[in-house]
Every structure is written in structure tokens, then in C-alpha cells.
Length: 206
Image (cartoon, rainbow, N blue to C red):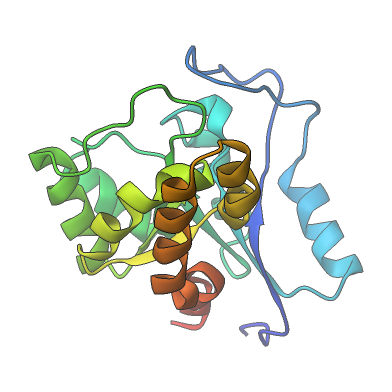
């Protein structure tokens, strides 16, 4: 019997310190956080369901997250990090295992990937067709050049970590044009920033 949805945590991590780390990571797991601990925390706060987010330090290795989804498929869904040229069957297999979105973890990069490249356009099309969301983790001042192009794909978009305090960072950069672009991008995405992950988590009842 499905558990009634009372509240959904739309961004949580499970992590293991002894799991291989990505060479391009900008952080590392400070401690182990198991799926059992996460479920216990949910129970303690009256949270029925959760969307697990792939942490940056594992890169496109989603094994820890997928194992967590398998441990409690009735309550958990996940957002994964993938390479843009991932094949269709790999995406379909993750969909069957409870994945509901991809994460573009582009924080602290001097040069951003080309979202207009053929591989990324095809990836976003497949995300849309799977009814997944695109979660973008990027400094606020850079969102103005990326977010409208993500939304043009027709996929749902989630702005991660409250756009990394978009306005504060943009003002710190000392550029009024960056502030304006970030603000405009966030205004057009006001629905997506707050609700897409929750909408994807509602597929728990499907």
C-alpha cells in the first residue's frame, strides 16, 4: 500500500566516504549518510517522500544513489548526473529504477559546457520525453546565459541551491548587467524553481 504524501524533501544526499570520487570534484563527503539514516530523519520530521540528488563528488557514477532508490522505492526518487552522450537504454533503465531528473553540476567552472551542442540538445529532448526535470547548479550571475536555453527545451527546470544566492553573488561581481540577466532568468523560472522536483516526486503514486 502506498504511503500518503504528506511532505516531500526535494533535495537530499546519501553518501559514502569510501566510494570512488570524481577527479573533477570541488568537495568530498564529510561523513557517511546512509539511506537508513535519511529515512529515519524523514520519519522524525513527518516527511513521507524524498527526491535524492546526486552529489557532485561522484561525477556521473550514480551507484550510491541508485542503490538507495532500490532500498526504498515506495518513498524515494532520484536526480542523477549523466554524461551528455548517455545512451537511451541507460536513461530508460534509470527511469525504471526511480530516477526523475538530471543534475547539471556546473559550479566553479571557468568554462561552461555548450548547452546548444547536439549532445546536450538531444539529452534535454530525452529528459523532456521521459517527463523528468533538469536541475541546474550554477552561480547566480551565470544563470542568465543558460537558464533560458534550458527552458527552451520544454523540459521542467529546477534551479539548485536557491540559485547560489543569485543576487548576492551577482552584486559582489560588480556588474549590473549580470544582476539584470540573472534576475530576468529567475523571474521566468519562478514556477520551476520551486515546484518541479515536487511534481516529479509525485510520480511515486504512479
